[in-house]
Length: 379
Image 1: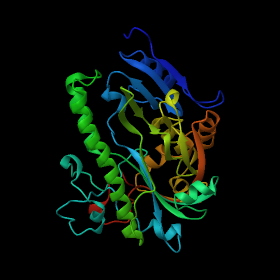
Image 2: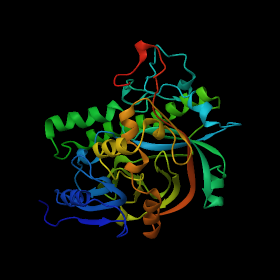
Image 3: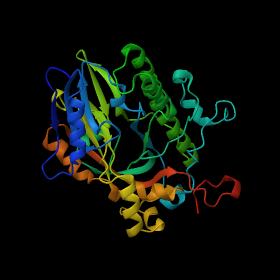
């Protein structure tokens, strides 16, 4: 035990949905050796061993606080399409579960976005989105709250953007596993060595988001572009001589961040201006309100698969995994409007604009594919 327990601050209003288990996890983390401060975001929810939606500052580096998906983040890319008809575009999304092989797919134009060596030489899973809450979404800019700021990003109401939420796939998982097999939940024995591998995973995740965007761009018929926003929300950084661990919390110190809603609600592009008490961080999304098991059970009682393929905002969902459709239903998440309101009330962020989903890709819908290509578990 450390001599003096770290402080815990929850940046949420009394009416916000914050599970007591998640707050308890924050206090468990605060009791670790070397912990100084835990800042919980309004999207806070329980995770495996550590809370999700928290920024945790310590004199000691704990790999398990970052978790296995090192480098996970959200990037926003400008889209230039003359017409965006969701029904047509949904059928043109490529299979983003099929990895790009550097040799077999050497002619794929998406490779043009790779300018340098692939970080850590990790070629498995390149160009894939992953499962869980990861997605690639074609959206349009809805309400613009800060026209000047939006204009500096090249955005205006009605413009199209591609939102990509993905991480380091198997690379981050391997890094954490190799640590835990020897040290469990203990600190990194060699922080510099861990950070070197961690930084590779962060770079890999960013590169992969660019690859995903390029694959979609070529499939939908527009030119790939550089991201206007790309912030990682699972990482550790050395700041003021301490280790700032972020698990489901985005850097909010003067940076633009896309805070994801759900596939059936807007997301919010915000300007972050969070200080040390908030771990220089903002929320990364709406945050789960239900466990996956609860979402599956309740969803099946209320909705059909077809109902979940079209959202309350009229957008379409590409998802061949029926269980995932229910697990990731909009009702499984907190109200994004409340999360944003809490950030604003605590002075952590200023909304710039909303993005409204048109097509959200979760995993390929291969239901009409030849028998040999159909995925396990599909009806």
